[in-house]
Length: 446
Image (cartoon, rainbow, N blue to C red; front, side, top):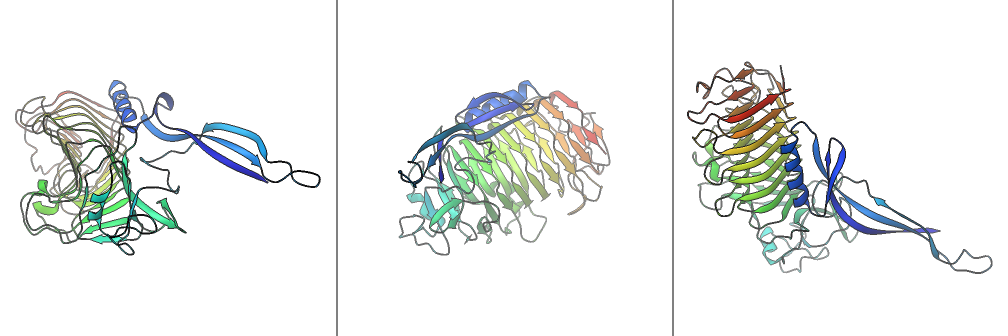
């Protein structure tokens, strides 16, 4: 009988430009930086990075020896190569055994050691984790009105992953589709004021990945301060990835500023947020999906967002050090109530706020055809698919924009605030904040 033995030879991140591998890296941070630079230098190219393993497979002959017996055990073949798996985030591939600390709201106890056999119970128990330890929440479990605060981080080589696991016998394995529902953090009580700490998930260290989770915040009982309510909050951090997370806002829609931002990425001198990746997420019933100010080297890709009250992606450019090197690509953007699919703001000064912004290969869809990023599902006050209020070096390439009344407004006339005739692409509608060096090419508008 042949017994295979798999030996991991290395884990790599490979950057591909138009399907051709250009660089190979040992960390996701290096790959992210390389891919961003490639996208900026080659705006027409298709740039992705993939995570795979190089493994060596050794086949052994099992058995004894002698006449009438199987041959002596020995090695008959060794095969080396790349696994060919495309990994969607940091940590172990889906379905493989995992290590770290484990939490189960249904079977755990905070007096336990946090192992698979004896998990913790509450999200606050992760304060007992050591630097570099992954945190795993049990599939099908719900944490009601608890917050998740990640205060420990990983390293340049390996992120700390906070994700979902499932049980296979006595073994904890990284969650895959079909093995229960993602772990659910349900902060259903919402917030009754814009107090400090008004976020459900807070990332307070570097080299962290949030993966395979569902996070919800309920209705809020106040009517100002949407920007201080976040489902996921990242302030002044380096190398944070949000992958395959479902982000949900209000339960019953009401026109209020207090319904929260899905993901807020901010930074203030001397510590801005950098090397941010948000991918494969689904977000709905929110004020904004993603709002960023003071962030550098960030990629938002393969996300679905719908029923958003304000902007899906708000590159605010407010304050220092503003936003640099932002990529928004391959996203499905649907249904806002009263604002834009993607909005860049210049902070009130021409050319200021945002630099090196790439918006490409996204789909903006307007539901009933009355508006691109609003669609009338929640109302008719929405504005534009892409609204450039400021910034510089902005490339808008190969987007598909459906159901808009207007097509393109480049008059810089400032007449489109809460505008009754939305545009597919609007350039410069904030006084004194006309963007510089804008390239718009190969977009489809219908």
